[in-house]
Length: 139
Image (cartoon, rainbow, N blue to C red; front, side, top):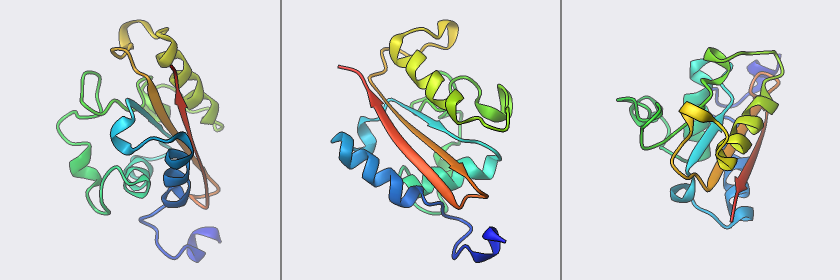
């Protein structure tokens, strides 16, 4: 069982892939206008935000409190509703990328953010045993 072999169930491998993706993009957490985080469960988002370094371990619930990640919040996330609200096909990762590209192109209609330039996308799989992080940006 992969889960039983994980040293810490409160962290994902985004702790490695997130900093590397930001470094490769030459950006910091403060430069990110939109986050698209795989949300197989509510817990997954909180653990991923903490692992990515947007907040410290254990601070995930406070980080997203008070509608901060909702439309109009100061940390837009999963603007299409995410897998838990929009749809979950069982292979949701490309929907994260698709929404990010549409946001950066200004093609999302009523849910369009105000001039986003950067997006961090993170997906997990294999019962949190694997993760990938990419950063998209426009000039």
